[in-house]
Every structure is written in C-alpha cells, then in structure tokens.
Amino acid sequence: MSAPIFDGRFPHNWTAEILLTRPMIMPRRHYIYPGAVEEVERGALEVLVHPATGESFLATCALGFRDPAAPTGIWSCPNPDWICAVSGGYAYLVDVKNPERFTMLRYRPVLEVLHYSCDLFDKSTDYSDKSQDQQSILFDRLLLLVGHHSILAWGSDGEAWESDRLSWEGITNLRIEGNVLRGDGWDLRTDKELPFALDVNTGKRI
Image 1 (cartoon, rainbow, N blue to C red):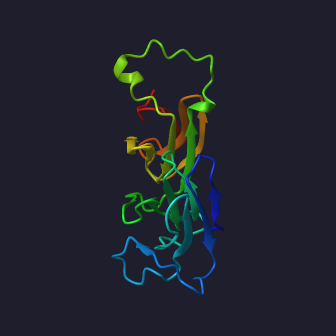
Image 2: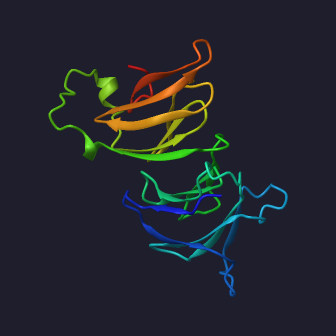
C-alpha cells in the first residue's frame, strides 16, 4: 500500500489526522465506512476528523487494495464541509457536519485524484460564446477521481459528471490545461495508447 497522502488545497472547514493506530482513548463519535464490510477494520485507514464547529470523530475507512498503485490519503473537496478519504483505492466522501451522510464511490479502485479550480483558467479565454445552459454548469472547483476506464467529477453539490470509457485498461498522462482535461487511454481495437481531451465542466470529449 502506498504512503498516505494529505491534499488540502481546496478551502475546508475541518482539520484531520491520519493515525497509525487507534487512539488509546476513543472519541465518543466513531463511524465505520462503509459499515457492511466483513473485517472492515483490518488494514483500514483511521482518520481523526476535527470539524470547525462540532465534535471531533474517528472515521474508520475499509481498505480496498494493498497494491501500491491504489492511493491512500485524505483530500479536501469542492464543498468545504466534506472530506474525501481514500483507503487502498476505496474512496469515501463524508459530510463532516453529519458524518452519517457519506458516499462510497463506485470506482473500485480509484487510481488517482486530481483537483480542478477555475482559478487556474487562462484568464484570456472567452466563455461569452457559451449558451446560457452551458454557462450555468461552469464549475469553480471539481475533485476528479480516476478509475481504470473512466473519470468521475465531484462538485460542491455531489457528483457532477462521469466520462465515457476512455481506456480499456488504465488512463495515463493526465493533465489539466485551462478547462480541458487531457490524457491517454489504451484502445482495445487498435492496441494503442490514444489521446483524449475532455471539457472539464461537462466531461464530454472535445
């Protein structure tokens, strides 16, 4: 399993600690995610979360895979009241104000997590030619979660979009250029790595 990552570049209303072991004195609030997995605590990611307001809690996140390619760590989210915890490629998005409220991502495993922010836009880009409908879905921030075949974007209100199949096995060379997400995916029919480009705001190919 890879070394834990902490990425808090989005503003967030919490602090968090990745624990090597359970605390000697357990906090009153303890949540196990997803809760229905047998032996969930074996190898689990233990995160002590301190919301800006309210009581701290321990989040025990079930381990997915021990493969070093499957990341482990915590990420801030577009919504400052949410935290993303990834445990061996299993991703859990948790509302720190109401920790009972969470989503376990359907990508198993998540292989990479990227941040997108409109602050990184090329300010010279003109978006005035977009229709009203297109302008309404311009996202300030997105958390991009990468699976073997496709990418899912998580915004401040939850899931924003999911791409179509970008690869038959593995997505590589990902980078964000303005509001375009570029990368390479392996194509089964040609047995070649083919480039792709997505509009970050819609997940559609361009």
